[in-house]
Image (cartoon, rainbow, N blue to C red; front, side, top):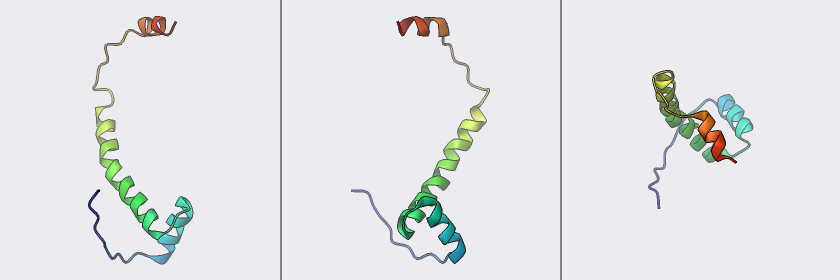
Length: 68
C-alpha cells in the first residue's frame, strides 16, 4: 500500500472550479492529477533536453523486413 499524506490547501475557488471542470472529477482527484502533472514535467524537460543528442543505430529497412 502506498503511503499517503493528508494536506490542507488554500486555493483560489475559480482556479479549482476550472481544474475540476477540465478533469471532470472531484477536488481530491483533481489535486492528485495536478500533482502528477507537475511531477511529470521534470521527466518531460529531461527528454526535451536529450532531443538531438541521442543517436539510434537502427536499420529501418531491416526492421521493416521483420514485420513480414
